[in-house]
Length: 630
Image (cartoon, rainbow, N blue to C red; front, side, top):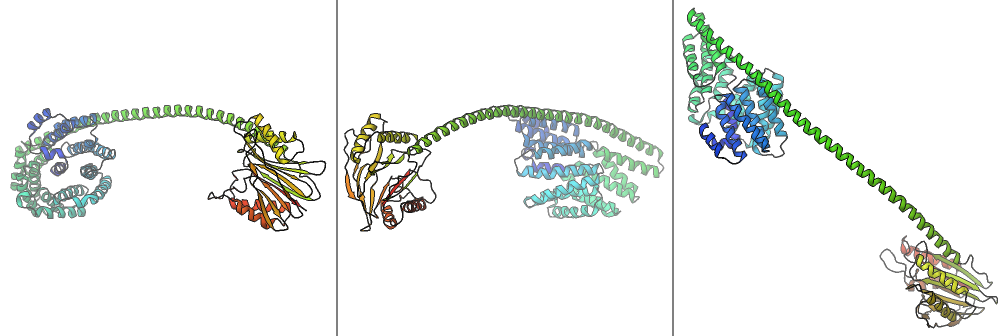
């Protein structure tokens, strides 16, 4: 029975290996010649596998030599997709021809392992996953490890279910045949019958010349287990012509051995001897040591029963010779196993060394990267420290500049019995460019100043400082003259493109005198008429033309009237869509709120513009000076 599966296994190989499709009808000599003519490693590997299959049926040791060459060539040329099939052939050859089951098991696992290392998925590799699992199961069955054999049979069945739909009837019959063989070895008779019946059904559907002998042999073995010797002989005989047609002498000899055993069990010794002689004749052509040993034992038992001492001794000696040969083969197999294990150990050491080198490389790389990371972390910390120091220095300077700017503003609004004054300033940055101030004269006249330097920030703050200093050095003259003198001061200081816009209102008891340089309109609310007047008497910004003259306007300032001076930060404040607050909206709000106090008017304007900006930061400075006549 050990040899029964060989023809089936190599049928699988023929079906699935491209090399066998191309070379299956070429003999070994032709293959060796062709091997010398090939240029690519892939083609050479395929020819080597073909040669090994031809040898495997007759001489397993030679088959393994060629398979080893194919393995080495595949590894050397990175033909990883060839290794699973090569290891499968090695497992089948060791199991079914050499009876070296430990080696067979090792190579079956190598086939599975090499399949796991391949990312590519194609039909051949899918099939091999099934066959490799089966090879493990079958070898465990030879080793009488039923539990492990059934474990891998389950895996093989799972793989078969995945790919069953694409299989032809011939493929299915092959699978059913090998499953039957393993279940017979594991004494799982019901499962063996199930798959044998499936294989027989497909086999019977073929024409006579296309049938295989294996399904009939398996059926006969199952009948022998039920002690149905007559029926078993019928099925053994049915297999013989198909084995002869296909020139599979091992299947033929296996059938003859089964017939001889059944005739012996039936005490039909003459018939048993006829078939024993057929086996001996075939053994001159093929290697069938275990079958030949059983044959000699049957003949020994027959001659012993018939008390033919000479013949009895003759076949006992032949039996012992074969047993000794098998024993020696076993010793050779043990040596081969030791060599193979040593080779695998060496390979494992090489792989382990490669892994260690990879680990060392990764450790060194990690340390280098860690050192580089530490260097950059230290550098970054140094940069952050320097940046922090610089930011603190800038913040200190900005705070100093802001403090200076705030110091230029009046500490409190002037007090005059007939006036209600409120002021408001909000910078867009730490240091703003807006400015307001008051200069009260001994006769009670009040000068109210509102200014806006170009842009905002520290440079604008410089302009404010120049304007403040310039105003303090100018005596009590009319607002337009003040602007003319201040323009000269700014021009002489020469701050480049920096300019200063400003309006000045001189407020006496009953009149106001107004002059402006490039500022927004000055609004004057008239209580008597409930109207708002605008004054746009603008000249150029201070610091522009040296001899610029500014217009002076005079208007009455009566009880209930309100004077509004402001920078452009409020009317031009944008909402989230970018639309400005607008001067018309400002004018309308002034009109409806001037009945309030100066502070309430200021609060109303600020609340309205903040709602317009919807929480956004004002992009420009906002300054408001409200003076109400009471």
